[in-house]
Amino acid sequence: MKIALICTEKLPVPAISGGAIQIYIDGILPVLSMYHDITVFSLQSSKLPATETAGNVRHVRIQGRTRHEYLNSLKRVISGEYRLIHVFNRPVWIPSLSPLAPDSAFSLSLHNEMFLPKKIDPEKAQNCIDRVSFITTVSRFIADGVKNLYPSAENKLNVVYSGADISQYKPFWSQEAIEERNAMRTRFGINDHKVILYVGRLSSKKGAHILLQAMKRVTEKHPRTAVVFVGSKWYGTNATDDYVRQLQLAAEELKDLVIFTGFLPPREIPRYYNLGDIFTCVSQWKEPLARVHYEAMAAGLPIITTNRGGNAEVITHGVNGLVIEDYNNPEALADNIIYLIEHPDAAMDMGRTGRQLAEEKYNLDRTAYQLLELFEKI
Image 1 (cartoon, rainbow, N blue to C red):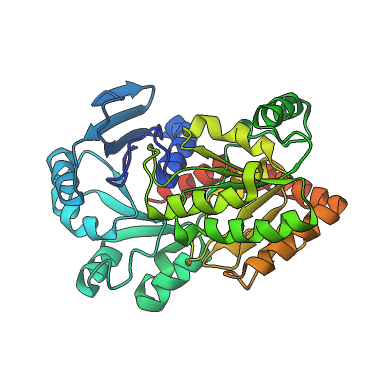
Image 2 (image 1 turned 180 degrees about the vertical axis):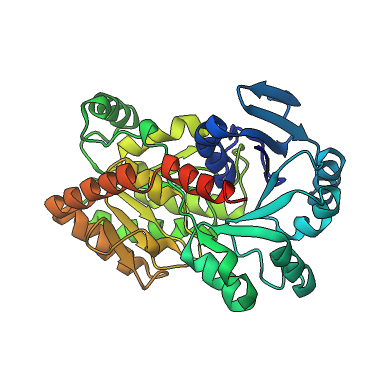
């Protein structure tokens, strides 16, 4: 079967500049392409050819400085040659693309709350729901949000959790990881510290400032504790803004206990998880379900997350991590960090459970096979 995957206009595939959707597509392609001919449409990049084919995967990269321009570019290349057109996170595009492929089936992959009234007007939303054969969502939170707004979508909704490529993530206690872990910690001057890890964009809704505030109290009680921020303001760049500058200024109070790596290409990030003892996701917004949870589980780290949006769907409190209800309170975060520092056996048990969950459930092979079942019902 010929299938088109329509990526968003933000970043190219493969995920050379990062992006959760782009990493997701990278992860599912090996399995999908064993069974079907896949064409991936994504944003043009000067670092990648406009078109290329490898095995059963063809990449078509199109221009799109704006969402409108990208959609117009899509309209010029989409046709009815595909049995299924699977659109990522842009329900508003489906009514526009549908007339170009009237005999093709359409489906939708939702990674954010894209059916909110500010994102799509009700008529277009209902047209999209009526047109698609199925909708996948990255969390129950996202699925429930669609169902509450549009009850007619209920039977088309399928929660398909994402995951990590577990071959890329080695638990920090494994022989493969120990040498690199020690070398990286020595390089950053933190080889005799407990290390708190943050991976993600530096933005207020991701809560980096809450973690920095919490670290003041953590380091008062446990002075040899460092925090490593892996990421930048935006994908593919180290440009700063007022928020990042405020973080950097606040970090000066903790001196050499705070490390900012800046932007890292996705291929480099797995080894940075080996730096950590404890992983934190401090989402302040209603996060659909941050993919860093899967990565941290694959790396064997105990996770502290906030109960915002879908995050807590994959973290069971006291089993593979800790869930904070008081999400914007640095003291609550500090309490949880201190607990894991002072209870290393419990922290290790949570990390080992997380790794087991990643191996058995939260990996991208499982995601791909779950999608494959839906595709093959078309």
